[in-house]
Image (cartoon, rainbow, N blue to C red; front, side, top):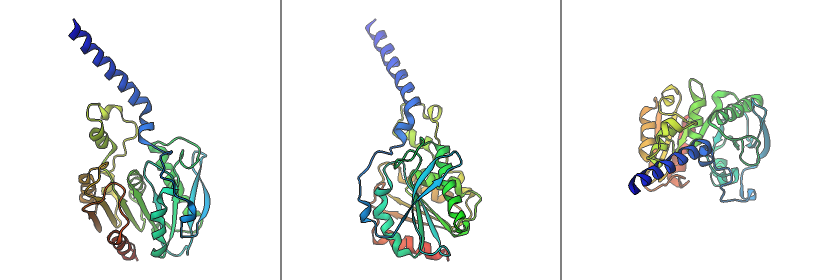
Length: 266
């Protein structure tokens, strides 16, 4: 009798957890308030704060560094946590690449209205591309840079387009596979709303790709980055670091690889 009650209790708890995961999964996926805050005064390149309208009437905060619109422009799409300030240590190096850059905060991040979702982030990224076009920057002059979750967004909007290039830092194959890794006891395929299926979409990109991934990544398995690279069309390049975790170290080796890739797009 006791054993039967125990089993029923276990199933009841499991069922409650399933309900919690289904309704609160986006709280687990998107973390706009996680921040290791960095003062914007530490940003070396001069930036203009811009508002980027989306198709569903949100306005996104963006930082735009304009050097010359005839030059290439990096569109930086960050990961699922933190603020624009958290990327300053990366943006500071873009000053040396002789290009423009735009970084946007997702809906629900950095004080933006709206709530993040897969389709919402796709719309945000497409809206950023449209904004760049509206100021005279052509699609073939835009380099997409996707960081972690941002890599999945970059892959989505890159399909069958003619961008200059795409950089994928710590990319994953799909959110379903990520969910199975981190929540193996739950039916992730059934529960998941935002799926970010990148592994097949990468095959529909026909311009240069650079995949960067650390072999010590404790969040996105390095094998996923290898699979993304293997599935990509040529021309493709990689930077696989022996010791980097999920947020890669912007050291001399990485920066040289990134600079060479950008220069090759000319």
